[in-house]
Amino acid sequence: MNLRRDVFQAIADPTRRSILMLVAAQSMTAGAIASNFDTARPTVSKHLQILTECELLRSEQNGREIIYHLNPHKMKEIADFIEPFRKMWDEKFNKLESVMKVYQNMSNK
Image 1 (cartoon, rainbow, N blue to C red):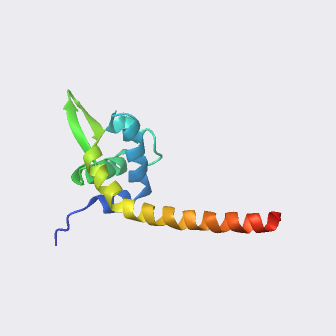
Image 2: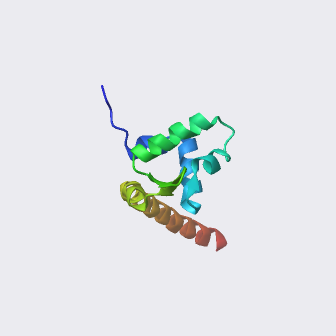
Image 3: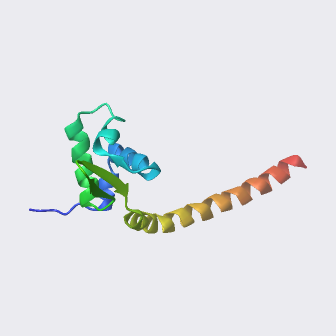
């Protein structure tokens, strides 16, 4: 059975999330990315393969090196999914803040 990976499977792993954070700051080679981790280079390469398969990263051949870039369009897919949850929690925290202000005003009297 050939299951296609999706962006949510990719970001489920903390190492891959760290790689995304690194590459978001600046495009990097696999070696530069691997130097930030205490794992074997093939392990980092596997993470890069998964992130590339899911299109969260795109790779660009530059001579003998491959440079990895963040794909902001695919990151938007994650943000779009999370947005309704963010709104829901914002509303809950705003209600809690209102209740706390009422409680604070009552205790200040």
